[in-house]
Image (cartoon, rainbow, N blue to C red; front, side, top):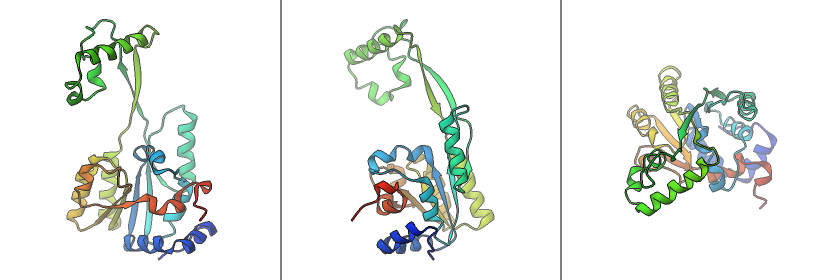
Length: 245
């Protein structure tokens, strides 16, 4: 059952009724949605639209069987933009699960290594690719790093914060304690393959809301059903990006 949370969503539902019918079939039983936000941030350029998080929540909560929408994302302490985002999505009524991001310093100091060495590049380029590169290419890359070293840049900061475990635990808890039967995952990460397969053993329905070109091979080979977010663009994008037809 669909009951629009806002007048705008109702107008769009009247204009695109086929999409509402599609989602009602997906949300035929008690459903939770899990957003791996770090994973989907890179989608905007390729989707050719931006996801409006407030409208996203309002739209999906318009479906009676959608129970909770989880938002998993890191917090960078003392960063106003990061803290403001978490504050905003909390005010939109998402179930927010966050933790501090880990900042790792990775050396790019090539001043004491042989120009043909891959000692530094090993940390940034996959071994399978490195072995295919010519020595001259390795030397060129090390030369460019040395130029940065001469500008007093000896390391870079890499941010890491993975929510695979938290999402996995939450899904199992929701299935076991709250009788959730349909699971909607917004992510393309291949690490979710095992989660999907284990949920499938219990005859749950698992959907990946993403785009066809972004799904990893592992997820394509899983029991999850892929639903293309582009089909509901007008319901979840910024107002100025809604199609004018």
